[in-house]
Each structure stands twice: as structure tokens, then as C-alpha cells.
Length: 223
View 1 (cartoon, rainbow, N blue to C red):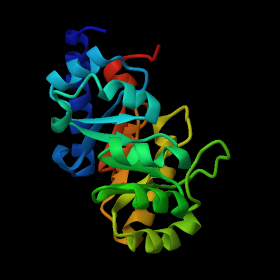
View 2 (view 1 turned 135 degrees about the vertical axis):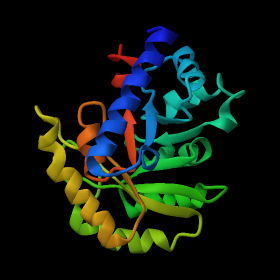
View 3 (view 1 turned 60 degrees about the horizontal axis):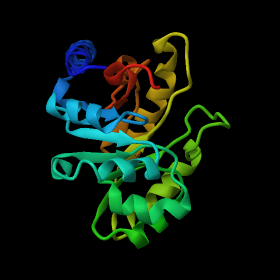
């Protein structure tokens, strides 16, 4: 994957984002693009940065820690999101490394991050709207109580909800899951809605996503 390839991929992606926003009567500025760099080598992360990306996401604390050491010169210009399942014993490191933790899936994990955060840490609650046993996240019926508890934690700033839709044949088949999360977000009076990936982000935008998490459409197939 060359710098030219990444630039071309980003241009196509921006056009698709703009098209989805137009269909939904929204502005592209309402949608934050987060480039997911799981297994992506540091030189390609730099290439994406040079192409204008400023929001990046990692799935694993250990992998992120290894990369961040090679990106210290541009670290302050980047917002790093933790988007993968986070184990309790990695809470301290995650609180140190990341600017946003999107994958808070329990009050207990939120409390662990709160104890270890050295500054006010923005977080999103992960919700398992599909009910799939293989996915992490709170059950939708448990979210309201979790929001109440987490909102009281002094070192966390609860900004919204996140979900991973099931793998579907047609992107539109993911719409009910996105719609469910949007309604839940609206009921709770939160702002951010992180949903939609390479295969379904246009449907997610049309259903109200404020953040989309894109890997393959930028960096190609993972190694």
C-alpha cells in the first residue's frame, strides 16, 4: 500500500461519506472519521497522517503501546481511540495511552479507568444491540443504569454509545441495529454515536452516526 493508494482511498471515502450525509440531510462535518490501524505498520499510519487523518483507533493496548513509541513527534496532533475489547488488567495502560476509550462495556471497567485516569478521560459505552454472544458490550436494557453510575465518576466524561453491528450480506441489513442505538442514545441525552465500519458505514451515517471506524477502506485488507 503506497502513499498514493492511501490518498486515493481517502478521497473515495470522503466522497462516499459526503454522499451518505447528503442523503440523510446532514453535513459531512457532523461525522468524525476514525482510521483503524489494527495490524497497520507505523509508516502507513504516518502516511495517513500526512494525508490529513487526525483521529486513529487501535484494538489492542499492547500493539498501540509499541506503535506510539515511534510516533512521538506527531502524538500531540493525533486523537487516539481505544476501540477493542479492554481487559481490566489493561485499564491503567489504556488510561495512560488513549485520548478516548470507546469500548467501556461495564460499570466495573469504567470504575477501573476512573481510578487510573490522570486527567478527565472521554469514554463511550459499548452496547451489544445485536445480542450476539461473541460480541462484548452492555445489554440495551442495562445501559440507562450504567449511564447513571458512570456519569457520577469524577475522572470520566461519558460522551455517547458505540456498537459493532453483525456481519451482514447487505449494508442495509445493519440499519435496525444502528437505529436501535440511535434511539437509545437519544433517550439518554448523549451526544456521540460511534457505529459503522468499512462494510456498513454509509447506512450508519444515514442512521445518525457521529463517528465511523474505518480500516480496510483506507489501508486495504489486513495482513
